[in-house]
Structures are given as C-alpha cells and as structure tokens.
Length: 293
Ligand code: FAD
Image 1: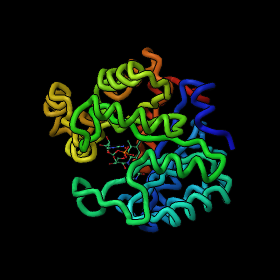
Image 2: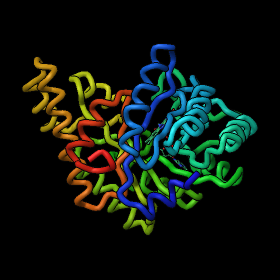
Image 3: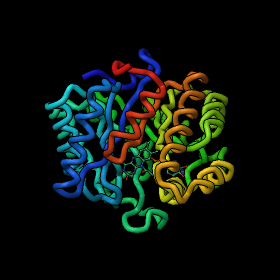
C-alpha cells in the first residue's frame, strides 16, 4: 500500500474522508453505504477513527482491515494511547501491519468519560502523541500522521507552547498532520505560518466538517474547545428555523472555505463525514475536483 506521507508530498492536493467505527448493526450499514458511495470519488485515502476513551477499538482495526481488503480505497487507522500499555499498543500496530495497513494517525486521545478531565497515562503506556509516533515508527514500515490544532489544543496554555509541542511531534517522525475542524480559513493559515516560522515543513492537511444542522455548531464547540466564529454563527442564526437553509449555508460556507484553502496551496483537504456521504459529495461537486467531475 502507498504511504500517505509520500502521497501528500507528491500528489497535492490530496482529498480524503474520515469515518468512525460503527456501534450498532444499523450504524454498520450506514458506514458501508457511505464508504461505497464515496469510493467512486476516488479519494487519496480514507481514515477510520479510534474509539474515544477506548471504546470500539477492535472495530477500528476490523473496519480498516476490511477497507484494505474489500475496497479500492487506501485506509489509514487512527490510534490513541488511552488506557493502553505499550504491549497492547504494539499488538494493535501488529494487527494493522498483518492486514497490510501502512498508514497510522497517532493521536494521544482524551480521557474516557469527560474528555476535558485529567489525563492520566496508563502506568505502562505513553504520555504524549510524540511517544506514540516513535512507537509506531519503531514497530514497522509505517507512514505516520499527527493532529494539529488551528485554535491551539485546549490543554495548551498558549499558541506558542502549542506550536512548540506540535513541532516536537513532527520531529519525532510524523510525515504529515491533519487539523482539528475549523470554520475560518485564516485560522488554518495562521497555524501554517507559525509552524513554518518554527522551522517545520511537515505538510498540514485541513480537516473540514460542514455545519449541516444548527446543533453542529454547539457540537463543534464541544469537540474543538474553541469558539465558533461569531460572524458566521450570526449568519446561521438568521436561518436557524429553516433546516434546509442551514444545510445550504453550511455546504456553501465549507465549499467557499475549501476553495480559499486550495487557492492558498493547502496540501490536502480531509473531510470529516460522520459516516454520511451526501454533504461531502455536494462539497466535492462544488469544488469540481477528482475523478467524478
Ligand atoms: P498531544 O500531541 O500529546 O498533545 C496533548 C497536549 O499535551 C497538548 O496540549 C500539547 O500541547 C501537550 N503536549 C504535547 N507534548 C508535550 C510535552 N512534551 N510536554 C508537555 N506538554 C505536551 N481522538 C480519539 O479518541 N480518537 C481518534 O481517532 C481521534 N482522531 C483525531 C484526528 C484528528 C485529525 C484530530 C485533530 C484529533 C483526533 N482525536 C481523536 C482527538 C485527540 O485525541 C485529542 O484532541 C487529544 O486531546 C490530543 O491528541 P494529540 O495527539 O494532539 O496529543
């Protein structure tokens, strides 16, 4: 399988889709329907998240294996350090290698239960994503990605410290990074500028998620720990009573933001799909990229 680090360097911009491991049979059907519908767009790769707080871990590995063996897609598995000893992490990495998976997104993960609670590392585990990057690197021929935070990670005291830690993580062996979702292209560009100013040239793919209903705004604030841009929130508020208009505005705003990012030379766009294909397809069509156009 190709290494995503090389794809990102050689075939920019990349377009990729993120899926979550399903929790129910119905969820599994929805996931595979979305995968099949998006497969025809021939994305550069797809990724499968690792269960927050330690749930659905086996499912992540199983879905990634199945994508590798039953589809034409290039899969990447997310991996977190939550509640795992180094021996357990090695076991998971070994299963991925056994299925021919060569691409891993190494993220620390959040504490189970309350994601903002105290982070307690497993007594025989690793503390930071940079340690996980080294572990995956040492465990085989993997291309490794890491997380980046346009607004800074909620646990980082300030943007400068956040940048310093991000650069350490890249120097530990990351080939590329993917951002947390954001809703203002300038936030991405500022992150890129400060990382370059710190002497780091790791390509940073933009993680995007359209607002498709008004509740997405609150959810994004919970997920990112960052405020939603007030001027954009006001535009959504104006149409809050009309679900179709909210969705239209979300697709339009994300398409505009992606266009601006592409004009600014973003190395790739990573769509967070929540296991649904329609919004991603619409944005894809608006951007007129890929084999489908
Ligand atoms: P780290 O890079 O370890 O950073 C965590 C905090 O520690 C930061 O505040 C950082 O500044 C600080 N820090 C780092 N190194 C040091 C150091 N040496 N000394 C002191 N402080 C330090 N979560 C899941 O559970 N499953 C997933 O599949 C998943 N996928 C994700 C995909 C993307 C693209 C993103 C952006 C996030 C994802 N997450 C996922 C969420 C992620 O696990 C959390 O945001 C987590 O809190 C941070 O992970 P990290 O890898 O950035 O951690």
